Image (cartoon, rainbow, N blue to C red; front, side, top):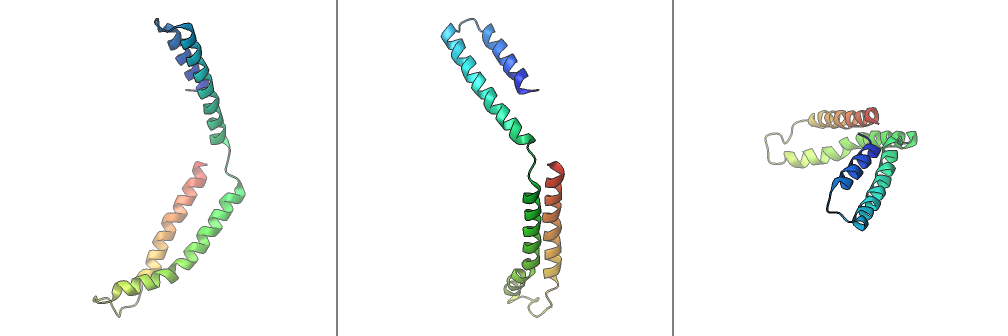
Length: 116
């Protein structure tokens, strides 16, 4: 269903309404033409691909963030351990958590590139 077909169908249905006066029909038609023009602009935006530089910079930022993530998680998991049975245990959860978060975010980025 294209915007032109929707415009045609709405225009046809407006002309079938018996109690609309000519100025009302013209006003509705003018509004419909403006909506159709804006819809065409939106369709052009949807067809415009995301520049490759944006995609690459997003991936570089994501890799940098995932590289620095374990340093922030060590403190978080150390504070979480206080007063529990896990207090003096090694922090093997930090690399597992980082890998899981990395898998999720890199998968989402890959899906976004595929959808584009």
